[in-house]
Image (cartoon, rainbow, N blue to C red; front, side):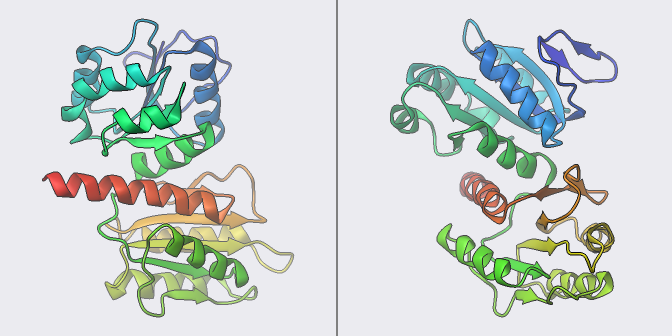
Length: 281
């Protein structure tokens, strides 16, 4: 069991991970899966609110706690079987309407998909759950499906835009802006600001490739300064060739991914959940 609330500060797990305080609550019916979840989210810089084991399965009191806990902004679960998912489904409607719930499908994924409600963010791996959780915990839910790609990534920006379309995102007009490898931090920041102020994008993905002729840290700082002024805009950064320990940028904690496909997939999960919740408001 773990709770990162400063007034509690309890870490009674077997994991060597020491996650930073954050908004993700975790629970698992498998000790091994629970430890792996803690390791993954800690490695990727996702803050944790709490962790609990679920040897006896989920109950309504835990769902109520997560729903009302001000420190919990999303919940990540590993459940053993389709029957456990069905039990959770029956008690989680109130929680789902207020906070995202992410699951890894144990047992038989197809059966789990059939009994899980549409509002649940279903993932198939620890990496996928962690990537989506980082987006859902710290970023505003996407207001729509218009996704813009900006940066100095050249061909990678084209690949990212293709991946976004495959996930159902729409590219707003000419909002795929690649300034080339020689772009300066002010130039990239100016391009990001143009998209953010244009009102034609709901989501922005900033792609930065570090080379021997630029400074990735300066570019991410310049971009973060702009995006911090637009807290309503869902954002993600993709950093290639930069420091491996950079997991978020800016005061708003914009998640940084190493591959464009992981960023786009996380955004797709966030968009689907946002759409589901808007349809029920």
